[in-house]
View 1 (cartoon, rainbow, N blue to C red):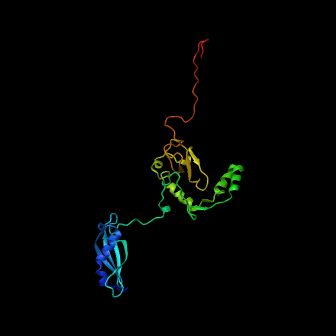
View 2 (cartoon, one colour):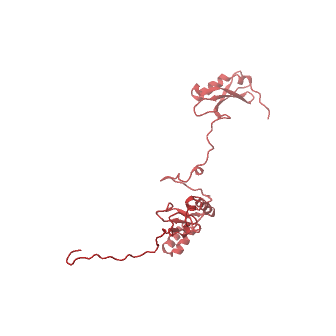
View 3 (cartoon, rainbow, N blue to C red):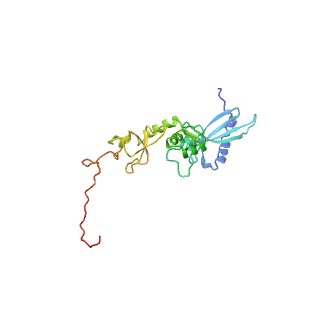
Amino acid sequence: MPTVKADAVCLAALDTARAAAVEEAGMADHVGDAAGHEAEADRTLTHLFDCLAPGYRGWRWAVTVTRVPRARSVTVSEVVLLPGPDALLAPEWVPWNQRVEPGDLAPGAILPTDADDPRLDPGFSSVSAAASVLDEAPEAVADLVRDLGLGRGRVLSVAGQDEAAARWHDSDAGPEAAIAAAAPKPCRTCGFLVPVGGPLGGLFGVCANGMAPDDGRVVALDHGCGAHSEIAVPGRSREWSVPDLVYDSVEPGLPF
């Protein structure tokens, strides 16, 4: 690409360009020293000035001037604020649905899902049929209906299941947690474990031990803690025994 030669008249219009920058900035203190120029085209040139406005470190005022052929004066074409090579810039914009993290959802807040969310698949949409079946069918059939998603517009996809399983398994309720590594037995053999249905039931359950740190949480079957139901106190029998009954003697005629 051929180099454009700087127009002498436009190049000499430094004071005109600075005045335009000051007018745009609103105060002279926000316009610093000249920082060079760039020839845009024949008889068109951009003067650059350091921006001294707070928060705009490394930015520059760019004032483009031009003139018509044989004219000895210039016209200001535009004044803009542009980042220089060392400018302080805002981080790259990220869509809101990629910025939300677990724990950000406050009471009353709404977090919609995309129509093509890969974690979800279309479900059965017959809500009335679902209500009828759930009210009248045996529990086994009702569980099957729930797993199939009857009455829900969308259900968890295979990708969603895999994502959830990996997240839960790698969490502090998984087998690699420090408390699980020190546990005497796994959750799968604990009487406080509540089984869950569906495709994740073979890997996870819910802890129902109010004394355990994971009470009310989904835990991996190979997770564990020191509050396992089958841990006995050394030297103490786990069998229930009925103590001998002891009767106090009562003198006749006296009230109890």
